[in-house]
Image (cartoon, rainbow, N blue to C red; front, side, top):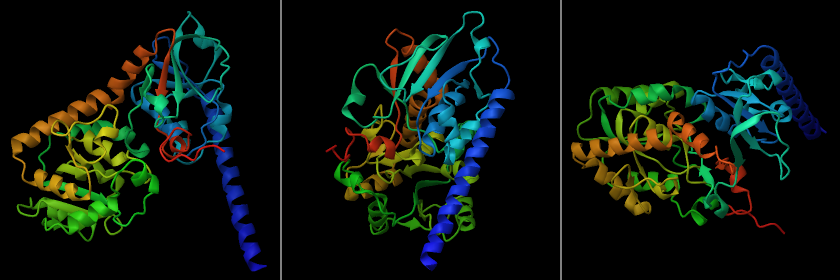
Length: 387
């Protein structure tokens, strides 16, 4: 009886929490309908139709990418998506100038770029002229994703850091205090897909390899000790290995810490190659040391904008190479990293390119990495084949 009552309380709590979120979502929809500023003739706008995208941050990531490029997000036939938002996705309501579609937006014969997801095979024509047609496809890892007529949207920084991107980019020119940083949870269990289908070494094994390599390294006991170590410009021990279970770097200090180092050991995420911290390191001009450079689209190039390695053993060799690299070579790699990020990742450069390519009659298939959602699709590595 006691166990059943506990389960009932947990279920009731979850239902009440869900009901509270749905009420807040409805209030958010109401604010966008009644309180958002009208769309002026010169405002850059992206009209969005999303029918279903029930996962806690990817809807926001997709729309925020266009918002960061200066586009107002206007929702059309998307009430179900908005009503079901949860997790980070609820940050959609905080997008600057986000609003619902209104008929007066077509005054003057204006055409709009249109982004759509989850509408099925039959697409009903919208009541406005379409200047660029973007059909979002979540099959980022499947073979169809490499066909012509598609554009892979770059993996991006963490949802909570998108608005800090200008701050990160402003830190590129600052003096570096140490050479190599690795940060994360050393014993984190990874999904078997990571090794079996992507052939990547998980973070735990890279940590083990570096700690047992004989490379001198500093491992702080807390964040204050890390800051003290960086303040004295370490001359011999220039490699820092941080166990995030012991030392948690506050989110508002993350770009500051990253920009203190020349290199960042970027290990893959839980179940796939891509991880936010790679993009955050590149944003500040910190050079990645990684195994999955070829999984980015376009790929990073060892010796141009990264240092690559192939396995657990060569991860140590890569870090040793970084520690012994002449300053001039480090500066050249940093220029490559900055050039790649500004050309291939920064929304201010990528979004105009996307909309230009989507302006033709065929439109453009925009490939979006929704992590677990994308990995569950039939063509993805490790996906279970349908019976």
